[in-house]
Image (cartoon, rainbow, N blue to C red; front, side, top):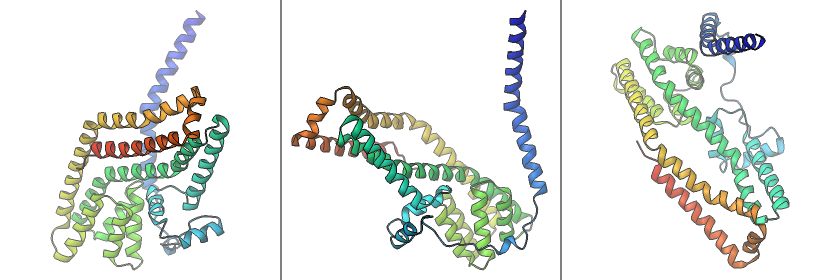
Length: 320
């Protein structure tokens, strides 16, 4: 009898938990979002005087910030990638994390396996991981922007048909859309609102969001401002084209999934086998880096591995 009661309670709790997670939780989040939108206060005058472009800092450490500032041209692509990723980190944090992670990996592997060459390779791979994470966050944010962008263009077109000015429509998009579309349009609106020429603000928007859809949008708006025409209709057509492109993009990713997975397996298999045999039989591997011919063989294998990765990436990366 007790077992039946316990079973009933567990099953009932499981069913209610699943119902709460998939139904009630989503409904409560939607209702909370609606309440926040209805209670959203207007921007105060004090909030409007915040400087748009603060002093760009490369690190919270003063000495490192000055050093990176002097070499800003060298690290400009990485700084741009960090800004586009939306992460709350600085360039100095990424570089210090890469250095510490690489040296720590090299020290642990060299001391544990007594294979300095393997430790150097794994150290370089570990040092590359923070930047790869930043690139992953950037690509994920840009993909989310592409998904939300057609809705933002539709909202802007509806605002224009309702009689609002283009700048007012930009403010509406900034208020209604979520991250990352909302903040990007907020910066675009604030830049032109605080005196920057509108065409310059649009071009800056296209630089911050390096997607072809954003460039289409900027080109359409600038062309309409110079040549005239129905901007609402142009934006409707642009939103439809972007949705069609995104649909094709999804289909291409599905079709090329097998090739991409095969490329990952082929790229990771030699490295995984090398690490396995280095741990299983370290004496055999010690002969490679103790003999000049073995060192040349390892260097040649690494070069061929890198070339193979680039070739596989070129094959599975389909332009659309």
